[in-house]
Image (cartoon, rainbow, N blue to C red; front, side, top):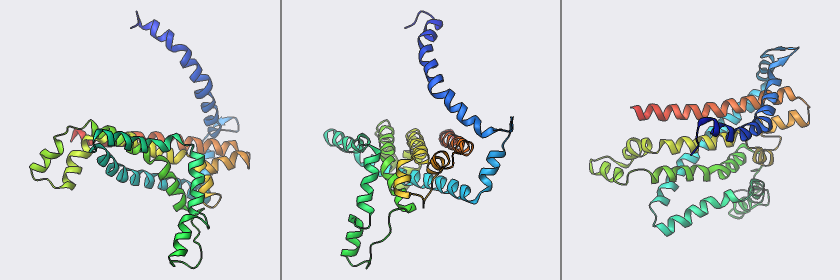
Length: 275
């Protein structure tokens, strides 16, 4: 396509410069704040951050909810992807459209819809009190459960779409061959389906985990100040405490956790494939 390598690099240079000035440079400046103190480079800001009980609690909660949302979305995603892949062509297209539809709606609108569902006068509490399961409405909002449900609903389509793509690329005769050889459905999934669809699981798991870690609207609306996550804590440090050093620490932690999740999932997939 190009006469030489220099021509290709010259065409890519404007985009690279733009990305560096608009994205990489501001992020680098922000992250450097957490390593600078007293005119030198130090890790004291990170030590101070993790020395506080609240910060450790928020960090562990964010990490745990990210893992839980990823694990549950993988379980639901495999079931949904299997069902969709085995549909006729017309039905498959409609179901993929339904899975994709929530992604076209603003996350703000999707999150606020849960207030209608989980509020004291919402659909869930009306059903609970109407069935006589509780005399008073339950407090469902501003809990970890509400944040978990909101994040799961927000990122589940990404996992389903990733697994659908992986399952469609899997050989059609792999599962029937394993069944003919006497494998039960659990063995088929563990020894045939999972190794052949690991790339889709890595992509979906990375998207869901990093999305759960970095989402702000859903934890802020459904969790409030009672269920702080790293994103909401970072917002408080900037807008309320005007503490950019602590915000820089949180931003660096989020980036490291996102990259670590992707690298770990890729290593697990590679190790399994080698076996």
